[in-house]
Image 1 (tube, rainbow, N blue to C red):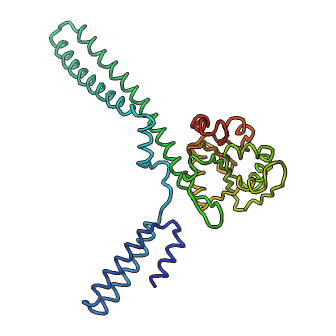
Image 2: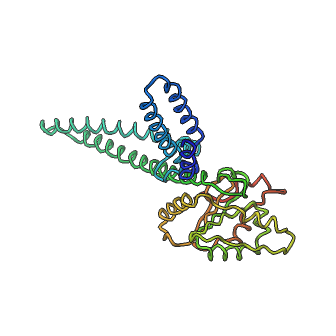
Image 3: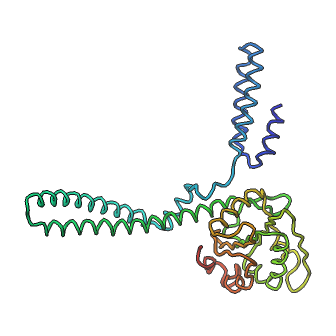
Amino acid sequence: MAAMSHVSSMIRCPNFQQTTFVFSHQILSFSNSISSSIHPTYNRLLRQTLRTKKISIINCSAANKPSSSTEISSTAKIRSEVLSPFRSVRMFFYLAFIASGSLGGLIATTQLIGALSRSMDVNDILKGLGIDIGAVAIFAFLYSIDNNARNAQLARLSREENLSILQLRVDQNRVISVSSLRGIARLVVLAGPVSYIMESFKLSQPFTEGLIERGVLVVPFATDGNLPQFEFEERGEIDVEKKKRLWQLVPVYATEWSRWLDEQKKLANVSPESPVYISLRMDGRVRGSGVGYPPWNAFVAQLPPVKGLWGGVLDGMDGRVL
């Protein structure tokens, strides 16, 4: 019964965590230790309850799904601090200046009320009140600029983190995450019907050698559920095996890839049915994206080779980050 529960949970949630089994075994060990000291009827009910709870525990911990773009992970926050180390300091001082100006404006307002009641000269008070209001407005504006920039950066980094945990099948015996290819390859994700992927494959043929030299790997994701069938011809100096490696990656867990792609299309105001491509830098960040066929010629012209004289020196020269 327990073994069937484990198998059932693995089928529903293939990305289960190993700690689930440890915890469930601890529960069964606990039930075995106390089984001899309670009535057989209660013992049977207890074991049935624990087995039921074990299934629910596995289902909960197995939900190892990429978080949505609205959920900011701690990793994304840390990366944001590293990329913009002085933003938090600036925002702190902006808030301090806003608080100081607001306090000064409150004091100036009370003085203005008292001066008006006594028919006194209020020019100096009005001048000080205007300075306080202007200072609050300026620092609030600067704070909003930094805050919006931080939120946009966190959203972008969060989407990249969600992409990095998506799974790819290299061959029949190996499944890796997108993050495993950081510093190794530049991924180009193609998302669309099989006809779109096959046409992209044909358009890439004249640039195959240049794409391989630049460490490009294509991730074809057929949105219509069909599998593309690639035919490689022995032509030129590159053998068939190298050409196959260019197109060998296969997305695993299609629902997770579809969810991530749908989020990107929604943010970019792109129709869900539109075929798109997404180009990643060597460090895993998004370099470019668009609707339609990827510009293979531009990739060859703009990206530096991963080997040779310029290998390593220009690894970060992948273009600006979107």
